[in-house]
Length: 297
Image 1 (cartoon, rainbow, N blue to C red):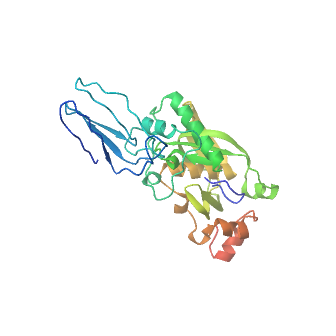
Image 2: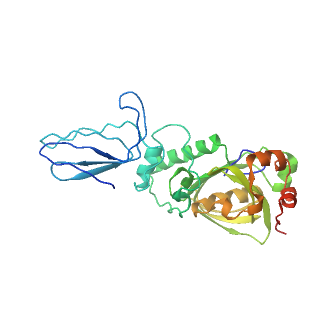
Image 3: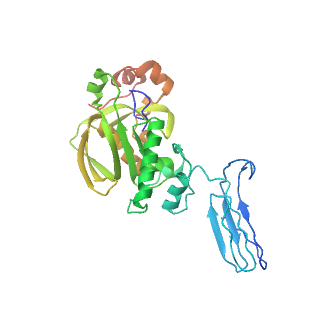
């Protein structure tokens, strides 16, 4: 969920044979800019076939092995890894690959299938130390964006994990209208929500995976969130106001739903239009009148 303004959240396979021979075949690789001088990216499968007929595949790496007649294999050398994980690799391998480089993770943009598939329940696929590192990377990515929430599918990992945090740096008038209060850092594992009561609230939202635009979304004003935290402790909590909007937005990501699926189409506004016309208004009433859409009553 985006947080840039007060107005929104925001085989191929191949092989070779021959006594004692080694073979490396890279399928569909992009330019890596030279092995000795720098780093590069390979979006390919590297398939190696040994003299005994065994084939080994290494997704997302440039790998070179040497096989002697005795069958000994030397360690792999790689020039770099993909920015996003290989979609068919085991999830722990995907996460390790993502964390190979320091710094914020790359945000997946709308159009990538990972954002449209329900994420897999977290059931210990990541060892505690790896989970901790992944959560730290999600938080760093959220802060760098900046945003008030990031879900694992937004970095290419189809697990039901999300992080949220909102310092709520908004004027008092905005705070009162939107119910935007500070939300401390939280990790949501296997979350789900249900509306508490029938009240709904409509405000502009944005999304880090749909950059450049915002739209009005009517959501439950209060929700009950259930799930777990990063230590496996149960979570059963009621959220209201802006925090309720954040947990709905991030949980939707884990179900393959983008905020645009729930948005009022006529409200869609570029960030420039938001800054010039609507960002200073605590609510979307002016936008509704000017753009011709209805708000929930």
